[in-house]
Image (cartoon, rainbow, N blue to C red; front, side, top):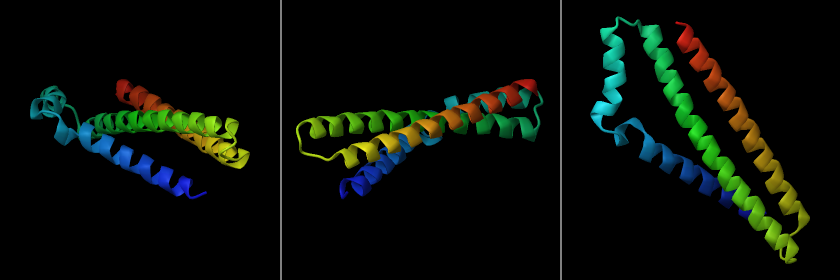
Length: 124
């Protein structure tokens, strides 16, 4: 049971590190400013820029959720090995599998939000 808070903490650290490495400040200024400048030249409104920003944020969140699911799958595989070796109980495995299912559900919902945001941005 002491592993669950440790695992959640490590996932949080990975997510924060991923966000810090792939955030707008980690990219060159040209890569961040170019899409906004092109849209500004085309006469886009504030709502269109906000929608584009929302799509970009959702893409980053989907990437973080995918990474979280990958880590969850690794954790479940590790616990399965421990259960087979008799070093961990089935309760730990079930808890890890439940957490993985919740992470997958979160990823699917985030992908749906992204799809809706992209469709909304394209219709404008």
